[in-house]
Length: 344
Image (tube, rainbow, N blue to C red; front, side):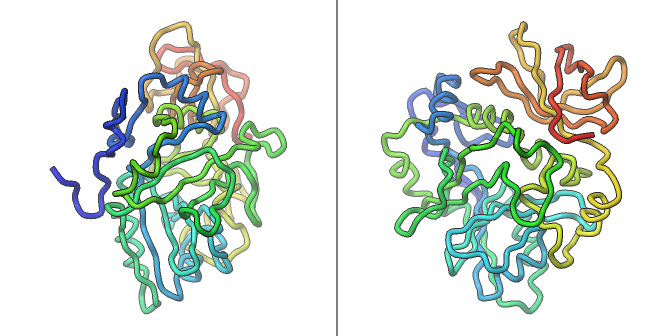
C-alpha cells in the first residue's frame, strides 16, 4: 500500500541484508542489521550511517520565514545564515513542550525535521499562525529523507544540506540544568543529512549501516532528550536540560515564554531527568514507560532504555525532583543506580 501524502514510506534500506524493522515510533526503518553492538561501535567511531527516513521534513519559504519562526518558537532565529543549524521548541501556552524542531536554512528555505508522525500536526499549527505574513509551509516528508551520521560539521556548498546537532553545547543566551564541563556528550558529533527520498539508497552507497538501536543507545548515554520519549503532556524544558540547546532566555515574547522565565528565575522544575545504570545480570530490558520505584513508592517513569556496547543496560528516566540522588531505584524488578542529569 502506498504511503499517505506527506508521510514516510517503508524505507528501501529495509531491503538491506540482515535488516530487522524497528517498532513503535521507529517503525519503518531498521532497528538493526544483524549485529547491533558492532553497529554501535562503528557509529561511535564515525564509520556508519543511520537510516532516519521515518523522520518528518517540513519546509518554510518566503521572506518573513526566519523572523516569523523566531516569534513563535523558543530559539533566536533572526540573522540565521545559510547552512547554519538551530534547535527550537514549540511550547503550549503553559510552557509544556509540544514540538521539537531541527532547523537549517539554505538562504531561501528553512528546512525542519521532526519526530516521526509530527510533520503533519506541526504544519497544521504553523499554518494557523501565519496570519498576513509572507510565508508558505509544506510537508515534504514524502519527497525528502533523513540520514543520521556522526559528523560535527555544518554542510558546505555543494554538499547535501544538513542539520548539525548542537548538543550538549550552550547555544546563545541560555542556561544549563546539568553539568557543563563534565558532560558525557562533550565532543559528540551528530548531524541529519537531507537527501531526496528516491536517492536514499544511492546516498548510502557502500557505507556501513547502523540501526536505530545503535543510535538510540548513543543518544541515551549522551543524555540527549527526545520528544515523545523524555516528554509527556506536562514536560517543561528545564526538567530534561533542554534549555542548553533549544531556548534563548532573553528574546522577545513567544507562547510559553512566561513559564520558561518564571521557572528559571523563581522556581525549580517539579521533575528531573536521570541517567540509569541497570542491573545487567538478567537477559531482558524493562519496557519504556515502566514505573521507577524508590522502595514501595513510585517516583518516576522510564523514558528510554538501551543496551550500550560498553556500559551495558542503560536508560533515562524522569523522577520527582526530591528523589534522593544516591538512592538505588527499581525498574520493573531491575535494580538501577542513578547518575544526576538535572540537578535537584
